[in-house]
Amino acid sequence: MSQTPVKMTVEEYLTYDDGTDKRYQLEDGVLVEMPPGTGNHEAIITFVLFQFILEKQRMGLTLEPRSNGVEVVTQKQPRRPDVLVMTQQQAASIQNKSAVLRTPPPLIVEVVSPESVERDYDTKTSEYAAFGVDEYWIIDPLEDKVTVCLLAGKVYNQTVLTGNQQVVSRLFPQINLTAQQLLAPII
Image (cartoon, rainbow, N blue to C red; front, side, top):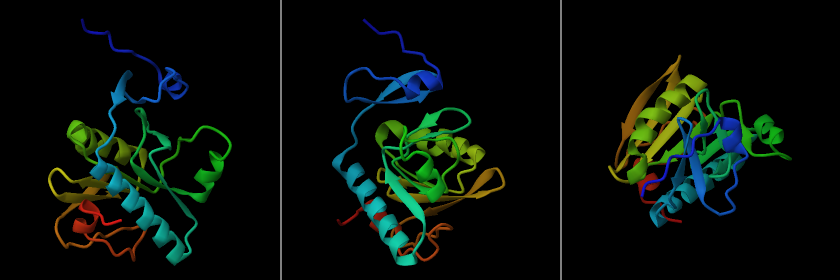
């Protein structure tokens, strides 16, 4: 017996609580359960977050790296990126209320999993560009590559990196990371 998909608005989704610890995402108005990531997926997220925090401290930047807990409401729908870097003003705006950004953070990182390939490469790429996210990294352990997307107008210029190729970041111009380090993090 199949269940009818739960349809809801963005505002209903942002306040939705089914009494469990399950995580959901809203896809075109339909509530979709998000399975837990693999250990490698979580290791990559932790490594990226740690590297961003180190770079923030080293450079004396007023940025706020976060993982998995901040929702971004794009022009289409809410997204919960694996990692994002927000401004100090954005962090202050959610300090004492739900962690939902309605303005584009400067950097978003998604780690590809088997069920998110199309969503991370196609759907989110166009949504994040239209929303104005300046920099979007797609870390793909399934294909052993990292795609760095830098906003140029309303579309991304994309650079695909593998192996020891160095990541080039606008937000963290001096960050010293290779694709291989991001794909096989040592924590």
